[in-house]
Length: 189
Image (cartoon, rainbow, N blue to C red; front, side, top):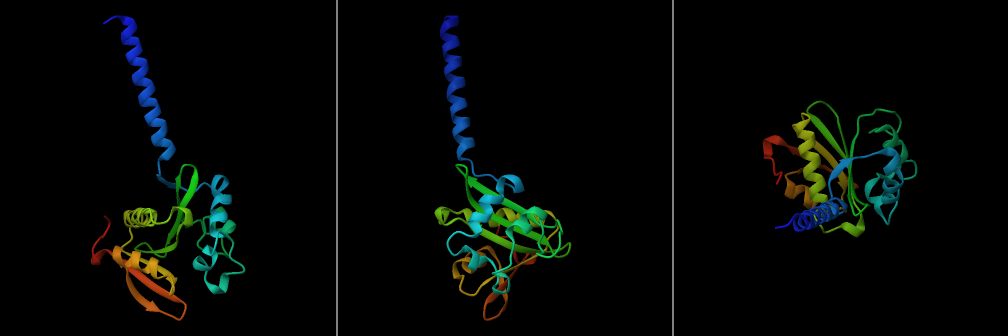
């Protein structure tokens, strides 16, 4: 084989593999840390899309909750700059598909604050992917117990959490409290 043919084969191979890598990276849906400057507008828009605000924010805070404060100060509190919140996003083709946030209540007990999937990306396994990632991350950071709260009407979310191993621990007129514990099994598939 002549050096010209070898060069053509090498150029074609590099071109093909380069295009595959570009396509894979463009369509990758890796979970990553929130970058306040880059992500604020997208996350804020997602919180305000459709009826997401009502599903995510408890009634007492519907008029005063600040997504900006939460993101800017990585804070589980609306009143303090705690820098205690772990926040992750999942993007598909440059569009925000999902967001999650959680924080330690103590070394061994963590709180799920948000798990949100854009309406345009639902029924694609994104909630399960974010939930699995977050629980594994919390366990890696020392969590033995993970708590969350969801609205009574949010039966789809409750079903997902129960399939994952969360158990209902309390219920009010408005909210269902659920807990996941390492002693109950991992369910991290």
